Image (cartoon, rainbow, N blue to C red; front, side, top):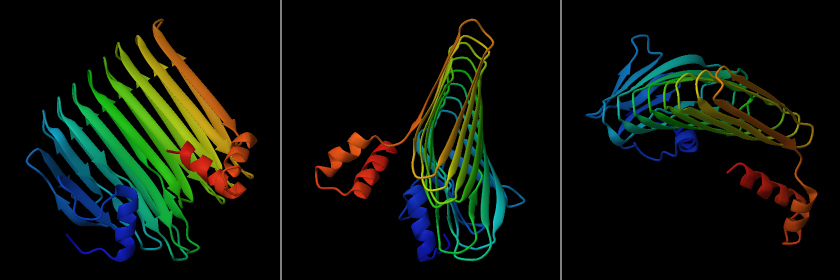
Length: 308
């Protein structure tokens, strides 16, 4: 593995929790090139010929193995689009850690657009964690635009954790999923924006098979002058269950727009949407202040607890 500088190591820790070379299969991308890669007997990571992504193949029946594919960027002005395709074999059970960290101390915008496509075989299980993080005191923006496509075969399960808490100036997250019979999709999004940041999240889920289900939940906080939009569309084309929820705290001059979309094309499709947007309750702050916290400390405690 190529050596990383201290800033890149810090970013790697923030987005992937890595402090050393991970066990299992991995590919670490730094400033547009691979800094290290390893496959295992059951998981093969194949670089694309154009250098703009990976093909990851997981053998059928693979159990209790992990894949780490984080990206770190410290070069101001660098812009890239990366395509990663995951083929998860029948009956496999894997844990995938992705995410991108950008440290921009220069005058130009830095941008990473990661397009991930998951082809999940019959009865396979995937847990996927994607974290985004930004830092640096330059005038250039830190821009992240993740695109995710999920194609689930019969009785498969995908759990996705999408986290963006700090430092990303602009993000446009687009997630699409198609579920076959008995397939299950769970998404948990945690998001905080501040300053003049903008974050758009769009989820489109089609439940095409009998007994399929989806649960898409976003928890977010908009501070200062930031803007967020949560747009979730669930379509039931068969007897299925679907739930989508936006639970948000608005602070300062922040703005949040939640757009629900439910389409039932089968009499036995049961679809539910919930949304709640509001400020922090005053009695919560007062209660914490009686324990010795200042008002700002009380707000931070509430926000941190809300986003856990």
